[in-house]
Length: 175
Ligand SMILES: Cc1cc2nc3c(=O)[nH]c(=O)nc-3n(C[C@H](O)[C@H](O)[C@H](O)COP(=O)(O)O)c2cc1C
Image (cartoon, rainbow, N blue to C red; front, top):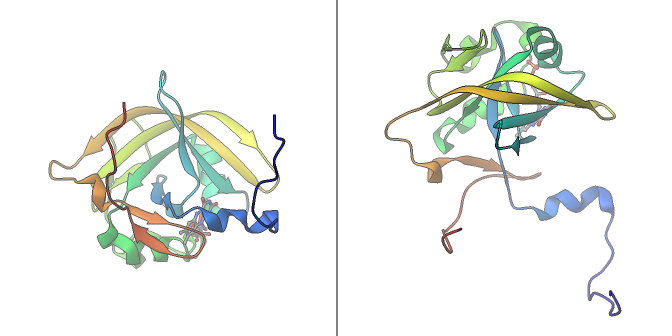
């Protein structure tokens, strides 16, 4: 039972996401385009699924809807400038890969490309979609994955509503 008042002030609910220090940020590639995505999460383990939230006004939205596939590429902190650029430029205005200095290469199971510069790439085939106001979550089954030998996940790039950042200390093992 909630019988004591929590000692806090009520805030504007629309601003509450500012209170999360970070979310992983990824580069999602299709056959010919790439965009920056912070709305990414796993949805189930068997089958393993990854979902991405895409605004329906994005050029990439129509590409993913038509192609039914996407690749989640995990950048490192070193790729911050490419991540910013992929989140500002649109594939509507020409080839984004060459403009931001990223190299697309063929994937193994899907027609969407992998990004050479990203140490982890996860090939997904759209299984479900959830339409919310303005945004659609494409939930993709993971059909193949690639990882660079020397990859260290502590180099993952994170972003909050206001900043980019590196992940912090390990506090305890998780069972
Ligand atoms: C840090 C960051 C995170 C972003 N996250 C998302 C996201 O989760 N979903 C989305 O639709 N757009 C997101 N965007 C915006 C798109 O990446 C951006 O509008 C991009 O230019 C769309 O490219 P396109 O027109 O080639 O599809 C994000 C941008 C940045 C910089």
